[in-house]
Image (cartoon, rainbow, N blue to C red; front, side):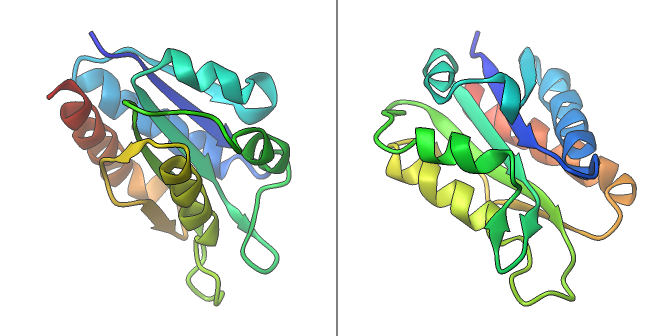
Length: 147
C-alpha cells in the first residue's frame, strides 16, 4: 500500500485547512496520509513516502510562506526518483502572482525527480468553499499513486 505525506506551511490557517481536506480525499481513496506542518519535518523524510504533496500560500512578490523557505532550500539535491508528487495552495487572484508558491513547489518536486501526477491545486479565496474540490483533488492524486 502506498504511503502519502502532505507537508504544508500556514500563516493564517488556510493552507493547514486545505491540507486537511486533501488528506480526507486521500483517505477516501484508501491510502493513509500523514499531514505535517513544514516546521515539524525534515526534507529527507520525504524519501520515506510514495506520494509527496506540498502546500504553501503565496506571499509578497510570489514567495513561499515564511516557514516553507528553509524546507524548500533543504530539498535542493534531494532525490525523489520513483516518487509521485503535486503541489497545492490558497491564494487571491487579485494579485499578479496568484498561487506562485504552487508553481515553485511543483518545480522543486520535478527538480528532485518526482513525477507530477496532478495539476497544482490553486484555491482562489475562501478555502472552506473549496472543501469538495480539495477532497476530490486528493482522491485523484491517491488514485494515480495506487495505479
